[in-house]
Length: 238
Image (tube, rainbow, N blue to C red; front, side, top):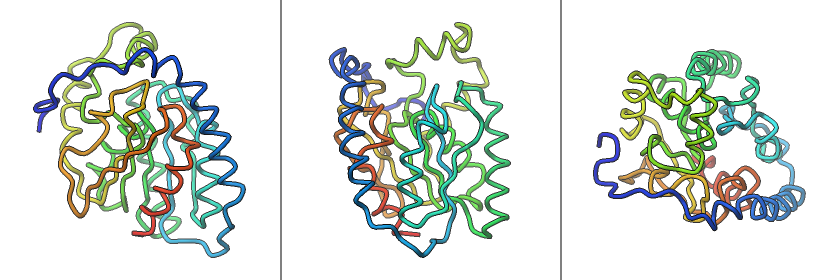
């Protein structure tokens, strides 16, 4: 599939979902943090290191609870350490370097978890480094239609000084829907108020490529109890 073929009309999420993102995220945080606190700590460390990439305008602070949960579950979880995600494609080379370092340190391929734009980055990198990626997990990542109308598009254009996508970026975007060579899971929500769920999951599922639906909003995915439970089941494949 190229671009958005067969997706039909993709409209931005409703104004109601958009306006309730923050209060719903607060609710998800309260419930999810309680679930994290009550989770038994796993003493034995597990195989592959995990690299977590934040969403657009997010930083490692936005993924801190998620990484704490993963560490409590026995995984070596890392943030990207590159500050705020400002949709700069130059960050891809920096992420590539981080993956190489983790691969060398642990002598194991890396599990990539990307939230929103972070998942788009993770998918692109996985396509080019399948030997160093154990599996790919995306959370509310619109890789099936990055250029489609969404509630983050205006902010994205402002950060990029209004220019939107150039020719190189559009070509890069059009390659994203193609399946990756490693196991992948797309976590998505029909209650997402930022990007349409229709562009956040695999078009075709198989033994290696699956979709998991949750009910939290976009901003709540990094602290959502349902997401934590989904990650537990996904990472058991390691």
